[in-house]
Length: 317
Ligand SMILES: Cc1ncc(C[n+]2csc(CCOP(=O)(O)OP(=O)(O)O)c2C)c(N)n1
Ligand SMILES: [Mg+2]
Image 1 (cartoon, helix red, strand yellow):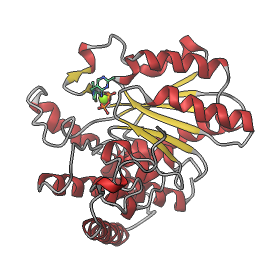
Image 2 (cartoon, helix red, strand yellow):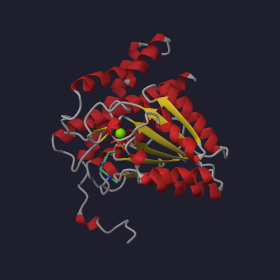
Image 3 (cartoon, helix red, strand yellow):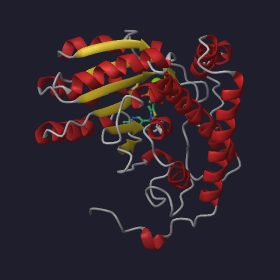
C-alpha cells in the first residue's frame, strides 16, 4: 500500500474519532435534538471499507453511521448542520443523526430500523447491474441485525443474482444492551455467507489495513461481476449503545479492556515504527482535524433551525 493511502486511512479514522468525541460533548450540553449513537472504537471499519470506494459508489448506513458517512466523504459542515437539525444540513435538518443521506457523496441512506438497509441496498445494486454503470453498493449493519429476517432474505437474492453489493457486518458484540453470546450461538457471522452461496470473510475490524485489504478484494469482485461478499469486521464499541447510556449491564472490566483494541493507536504505532511518519506529522493532523471540526460546529450553530415551512417539501407522499 502506498504512503498516500496509509495517510488517508489514518486521517479518516482520526477524523471520525474526533468528530464523534465533539458530538458527545455538544450532545451532553443539550445542543443536539434526539438521540445519537457513536462508533468510537469502530473507526477501522468505516475507514478501511470506504477508502476502497469511489465517490460514485453507494453506501447504506445505520443508527451508528456517522463514521461511515464521514469516511465516504460527506461534507463536514453539511453533516454537522444536519445533526444539529439546521437548514444548512445535507437533508435540510430533517434527518438528524439517524437518517442522513447525501447524494453527492454517495451516502444513499441511513436507517434506524435494524436490518432495514439490507433489502434497500439490493435496489441500488440491482440498478447498477441493470444499467452496467460499474457502481458498487456497500450496506453496513451490526451483529444484531444479522439475525433479522431481512439479512437472510437479502443475502439469498444478492447471491442468486450476483449483485454488486458488499454486506459489511460491524460485529461489536452488542445489540443495544444484549451481549452477542446471549442471542446467537455462532461467533463468526461471515460463515453465514456459505449458506447463501456467496463469499464470506471475517476480519479483525480494529486492524484498518486488514479491513482495507479484504474490502478491496470485495469491491474488485463486485465491480467485475463476481457478485456479493459478506464482510464481517470484528470490532469494539467503547461507549454505550447511545450517548447517555450508563452501560450498567456491561462488565466493568470489558468497558476498560476494549480500549486496548484501539484501531487508531495501533495504526499510529505502525506508521511511526515503519518510519512512514513522525510525531510532528501526527500532531499536525490533529491540529488540522481540530480546526475543521470547530469550523463545522460554528457553521452548524450559525445556521437556522429547520422550520415548519419545510415540513412538506422533499417528501414523496
Ligand atoms: C426492527 C428494529 N428492532 C429493534 C430496534 C431497537 N434497536 C435499535 S439499535 C438495536 C441493536 C442493534 O444492534 P446491532 O445491529 O448489533 O448494531 P449496533 O447498535 O451494535 O451498532 C436495537 C435492537 C430497532 N431500531 N429496529
Ligand atoms: Mg452490535
